[in-house]
Amino acid sequence: MKICYYPGCTLKTKAKELDRTARLAAAALGVEMEEIENWQCCGAVYPMGTDEIATKLSAVRALDYAKHNGGKLLTLCSACHNVIKRTNEDMKSNADIAFRANNYLKLEETYAGETEVIHYLEMLKNEVGFDNIKKAVVNPLNRKIGAYYGCLLLRPSGIMAFDNPENPTIIEDFIRALGGTPVVYPFRNECCGAYVSLKNSELPKKKSEKILASAKEKGAEEVITACPLCLYNLQVNGGDILPVKYFTELLAEALGVKA
Amino acid sequence: MTKQERIDNLLRLSGTDVKKCMKCGKCSGRCPAFNEMDIKPHQFVSLLAQGKIEILLGSDAIWNCLSCMACVERCPRGVAPAAVVEAVRDTVVRAQGKNGLKAEDIPQIVDEFIPQQLLVSAYRKYNK
Ligand code: SF4
Ligand code: SF4
Ligand code: SF4
Ligand code: SF4
Image 1 (cartoon, protein in one colour):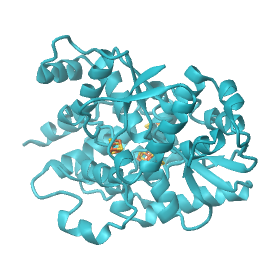
Image 2: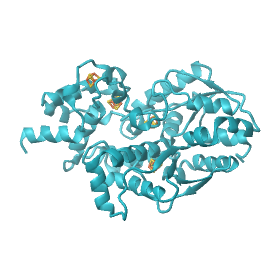
Image 3: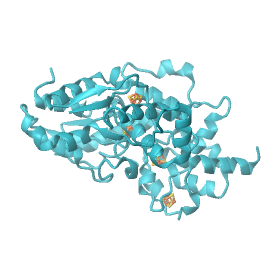
């Protein structure tokens, strides 16, 4: 299976390991991730102001490219996924935004939200199947792992439609498929402090410490995430409470392709 | 600009119907930045509905909202408090000289681990 892939800028720089291990694991599972041409940074935060257009155009360009190249767009960074999926919804259901974006881009054919935006975890679950991943595991993880969802994959749930926003299970199912033991802890879908780190690092510090302490108290030996900013906040602002890794690092490890 | 024009602009920019709020406070109850906010999420909604926008435009809470969407998720009336906070923040930073981050301060804050995502998102939120 071949699918258009939007890596995003952080995965080309500070989060190379997220990109690298995701590609290795996908190849081992028979999925070819085809990086789209000339993608631009999505802006990392979905602009809520109803008059924002310019800040959404890079997402629309990527979506339109995918529309003409298989119809699906694979994302990996939680922030890219959130921005691109919410912008896609605007193109589908907000006539004013859709008109102004199309007017600016002068696309030959109007883009109206046709592309299906799929996060890597959704691809693993729905296209590959956790059962098939389980069969492909050569190094079962045999340890207790806490899934950290954060906010961007889950909310707003009406648009993201990723999982139950209050009690998600997809990453726990993923951990189980890799032979690990998922640890459910109360703060797994609480925000880590996000971009406020740059303005007021005390807030992310409090939030991140609380999240990791809660995972540790429930017995987790490590925590996994899909977001480079979550990883940064938990690691740098959360102190040395628990190791934090990208979920794809564990996938590549379990599939025996990490080195 | 008249006060009414400023109110109308905030209502339009937020894109949410603040009159639907029933003042239950669930949004603030769920907000992870609650303790760091001088004006709480439910007050953003209520003050905008009453047209008391000077209080909102002078609030420090706009710098601590995380855009985590927890308030939006929990509101039983389909109101989006986060969108009101963002409309206020946009209005403040779009005015000349009101950026929340100064480019010259960035080098001192940046450490070797900071992901590009953090710089991009903070700039998008705090600067215009
Ligand atoms: S969300 Fe992050 S990784 Fe994705 S493109 Fe934007 S800044 Fe880059
Ligand atoms: S937890 Fe923080 S960094 Fe992670 S998705 Fe939420 S806002 Fe982003
Ligand atoms: S989006 Fe802002 S106001 Fe709403 S719950 Fe999160 S931090 Fe609080
Ligand atoms: S949760 Fe909704 S209805 Fe309740 S106070 Fe907040 S905005 Fe108003």
